[in-house]
Amino acid sequence: MPSKRASLLLALTLCLAVPARAESVKVMVQSSPLAGFQFYAGRELWDEMKVGDALALVREPDNRHDTHAVRIEWRGRSLGYLPRKENRAVAAEMDRGGKVEARIAQLNRHRDPWQRIRIEVYVVL
Image (cartoon, rainbow, N blue to C red; front, top):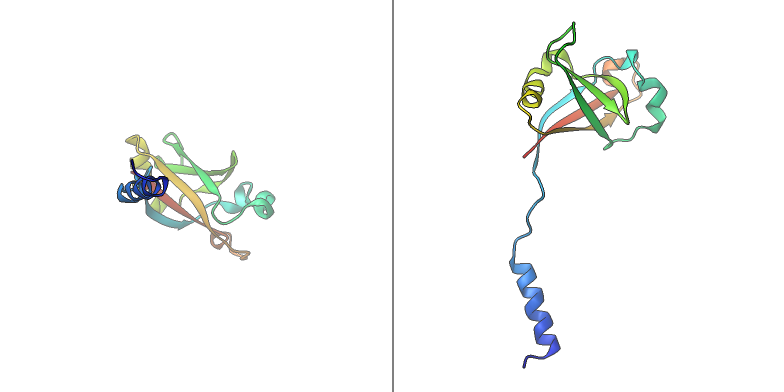
C-alpha cells in the first residue's frame, strides 16, 4: 500500500499533467475612441469609471443615423457609440449571434471628447 506522501505526490503529478481548459478565449478585434461622449452620461459618470470596467455593446439596427450602430453602455447608462467608420465588423458579428465583449481601455481627461475614453472590443470564442 503506498504511503500518504506517495499518494499525494501521485495526485499532484496527475493534476499538473492534465492541461487546464480555458473557459473561453477572447480575441481583441477593435480598439477605438468612444464616439458621442459629450452627448451622453460620460461627464456625469466620469469619476466612477475605471480602466478595465466592462462595457455593454447594444446593437441598434434601426438607428436612423447608422444601420450598423453599436451603442456603448456602462452599468446600464449610455456613454456613446462605436465610431461609425469602425463599427461594421462588430455589428455583423453581433447580428450573426457571436459573443462580443468590451471594456474601458483608457480614460484621459482631454479637452477633445474623442480623446476621453478608448474602448477595446473582444470576440469571445
